[in-house]
Structure formats: structure tokens, C-alpha cells
Image (tube, rainbow, N blue to C red; front, top):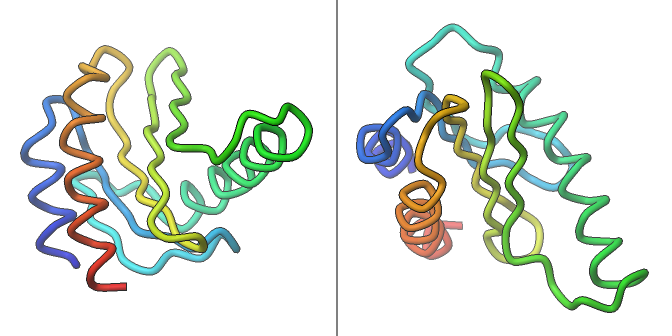
Length: 116
């Protein structure tokens, strides 16, 4: 799993971390090129992802959440579900290419799904 995550960070311009986590907010595996606390990053975004899933599926009737993207001034995070209980997190800087993150992120999620 670590090989897929480190390759994902290399492939996406501006990416600096990738992780696999459970919807419970626990980090399963992660790779970062900085000293950022991946456990904290995963825990915070797991909560956002759970709320988005609930809102789209139950409240809004929009079906399953396929992905989530949150962008701040200096940080952006792309989330992609893996099976029903896990997700891929890709942290990129605020000026990175979302299309590239989505393309490589979906591919990595498919590969990781076979492992989980």
C-alpha cells in the first residue's frame, strides 16, 4: 500500500501527502513529504466525508458520494472512497491541478481496493 501512496504523491504536481483511512478517522497507511501529522489530517477529513455522505445519500437523495474536494488558501484535499468503510486522502497545495489529482487518485483507489 505504501508504494501506491508514495507513487501517487510523486505523480501529482503539488501533492505532499497521501493516506488510506477508515471512516472512523483512523489512519491505516500514509506517506508524506512533510512533517504534517497525517493522523490529524485523516481524522478531521473523515468527519467531513461522513457528513457529506450522509447529506448526499439520505437528506438530498443524491446517491453515493463518489469524491470530495476541499480547498483552502494553502491546502487542498481530495478524498475518494475505497469500498464502503475506507477512503483515499490526497493532500495537495492550494494551486495544484484538481484534474490531475482526480485522475491519479481514482487509479490509486482502484489499485488499493484490491489490497483492502
